[in-house]
Image (cartoon, rainbow, N blue to C red):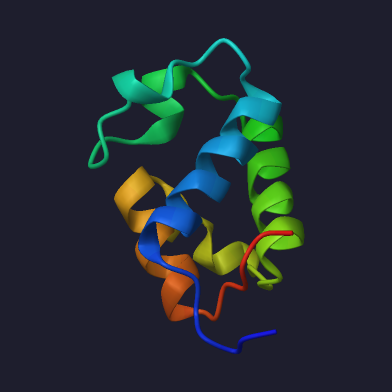
Length: 90
């Protein structure tokens, strides 16, 4: 098993899987990477919390509540998760 960080594409795919679990109707191709996910797909606060929990579990990253704003966009989520040691999703 490698200790290399996952590639950006792998982290992005894990984010899209987590979004799909809370909002299965979302078309990933329609998401703008620099626009708030909550605005684009109308996530309520419970959906967003479930999204964050799913990311933390699948990528092995602890995400404190004070950092949730950094996960607001797709690009922000990718950058945050890579910077905080995301593991390859299992």
